[in-house]
Image 1: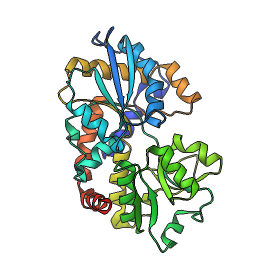
Image 2: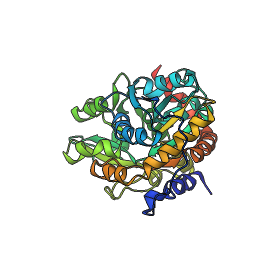
Image 3: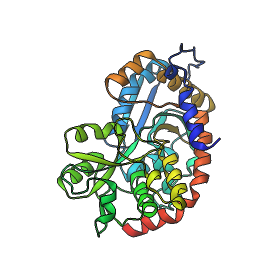
Image 4: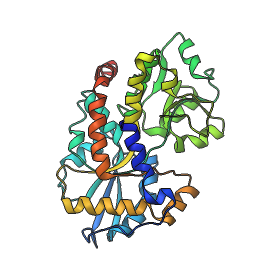
Length: 337
């Protein structure tokens, strides 16, 4: 069974997401009356924070913690927060929440900003994995992806740093055969989106939930899906794998698999086993809580749960499978240095 199907099945087999009764979860009192700190790899207005705040009260409910704090730590496309958590005491009281894809891709690229080994983190569970889109400005002359290859110049990409979107763009340019110029120095998705809307950049990659407002307002237009299949909301937008030449499809599949690790909770290496078990059980309970599921639907915040133990294995496998991306990723980093 390939990695993508393993990940998909892990999500589909979550009981609450199948519409069956929610079982009782075995949980310890490890976090009871303690303060649990969630370190979010992004700014207070970003998508990671919105999810962390949505999930936080339910984590408090199921862990029994006295308080679940949200601490923002933007920088380096998530690397600053990851490096911080890597060095923390492994007592389970400080947990990273952010995009795991960056944590996999940066070491593969040999990024000096990645001072950790992704497989040694303790993976506690994925909260969501949503389709990502390459979007352009609503007034852009680029109407479809085919127009990107007709520019006769590099596609200008505003970037917030060497995050998963930066690396994904590099793989897309290589596999789909277009020139790319990354312009760094932007602060978060809102900043890069504004640049695209104003015409300071040609386009950027963004998640489904974060893109809806601008697309519906006509400020942005999706031209490519970085996902394993077309999105039901945008059936006319092709996937990158559909457009890739046969000898490049494996590269696209690798980057899609890595991106689908998405927003997850991770702990420092060698975290207390009781803490790991307690957090995993609590997150599983949250993801199957009917009230929580209803709130995600009302807020248009889709969830796609993956169990932490399963995720630990999946990350190890996709990291190994992604090794063939290393030359492309390293060249992308060199191009902006």
